[in-house]
Amino acid sequence: MNIIVFGGSPKGEKSVTMQYVKWLQKNHPSHRFEVVQVAQPITRIEKDDGVMAEIREKVLAADGILWAFPLYVAMVHAGLKRFIELITECGMSDAFSGRHTAILATSIHFFDNTAIEYLRGVCEDMGMVVDEVFSAEMQDLVRPGGTEQLGLFFRKWMKAIEKGMVTGRRTAPIHNTQRAYIPGNSVPATPRPITVGIVTQSGGSKNLDNMVSRISKEFAKVELFDLSSMQIAGGCTGCLRCGYENICLYEGKDDVIATYRRLQKCDAVLFCGFIVDRYFSARWKTFIDRMFFSTHTPVFPGMPMGFVVSGPLRQLPNFRDILEDVYGAMEVRLAGTVTDEDENIDGSLTVLADSLHFYASKAYTPPNQFLAIGGRKVFRDEIFGGLGGVFSADYKYYRKHGWYDFPHKQIGMRLASALMRTAMKIPPVRKSMQDNMKDNMLMSYKKVLR
Image 1 (cartoon, rainbow, N blue to C red):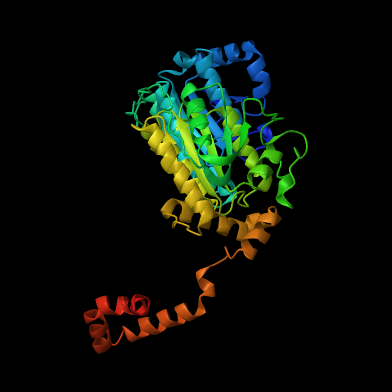
Image 2: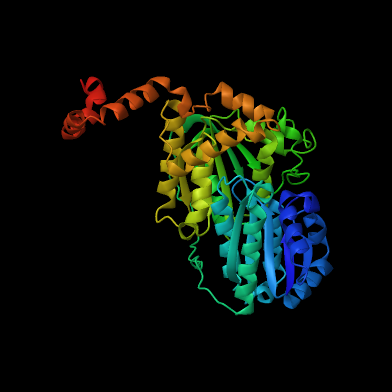
């Protein structure tokens, strides 16, 4: 088989993901692998039309396409995102149509599902057949059984290609039902007395520009940051120099880190973007990836935050999960999301402005739900364990803010549970407890209700 591998890491050949690919190459010599790094050299690829033309020919000659990438903020890296955009811009989608493909991702399983679902949707939109997905924990390859599982994944994929198996798509196709939004004339007589930092990308969507203009009038002061004119020296390189004390190699070299620090001084934050394929634009993704200057320490802890989106967000529940649950795991207080799909956009923007003002002026913190809570615990465990040495700044923050709330510290609760398990072994006691279980479960609430 002739396999083309698209490398989606900014580290290129030195990425963890590529070690999985190299193992496949060494252990399956009967197949021809051609690795094309697309995230690391994305600037060069953008500037040279000939590169995309060469890639097109390689795709047409391939029996299978393997997307190999690490996770960056619950998604693919901005470089890979931009490459996917270039496929459409260069009119190359037809070359991918009908091709068999597989996805190989490496991560610590923090929202790996959202990155994979994004790429699956993009592939299916191009008409590709997504045969297999292998989402590896970073260290799986060096653990017992890790190479065996990787080998089985590859052999299963080869079998699917050989037999010409065709699976139905799992993601729904996107239908563009966008309507032009013209803001109304109603604005508050007294703007809400808070400072809101708004990050947007102008010029890509008239609806988005109008929504940003409309909601800006709701506040007494707005700090506006436009990605279209912002100086961005480059994307996250994955060098991890920031791990020790959150100092990035780009410090002082462009506007990104300074923008985040100005946003941190605002009362609330709005991220506003338009959808390109199944996410914000690659430029937006670059800005989000560069949030890693703070590594896994929350950038906006406790801050009210909202999203304004132009595009079919209702058709992309995966993208909504990224916006709401990933940032929830980062300790923001999510005030809401508005899209230009809403029937009453003016009213929705006003409600969002009210929510931001309420959160900014009150101590209300709505409880997170499963994905955000589970995501934070994944990071807690990883930083407490093997990653704590590299990410010293994270370790200190998590310890200071009580993230290491493992069950083994709840001595009283564990002792009570042990005593109850012992008591439940005595039949009369067990029967009494079971007969009164509903009342017993409510005992701790009676004092509060009184």
